[in-house]
Amino acid sequence: MKEKELKIPFNAPLNVQDTELQTYGCRQNNPDICGNNGMSDICAFVCDDGICKKPSRAWKRQYQKLKG
Image: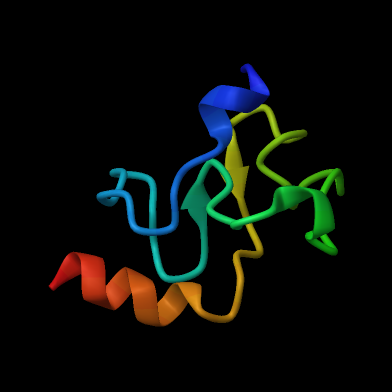
């Protein structure tokens, strides 16, 4: 998948694969400074499924806001 397709705005509507613990694509404002950027089995940019398995701490609250 292309990196540009995996950059998802933090306030974008939820994707069916989003949960409190993971996001489809990367929702970081600046993925280049993410501590998990490029980590296999964690970062959306390197995972085959395009899922970020360790989103920011603010994501859980944002997920509830977008869901509700």
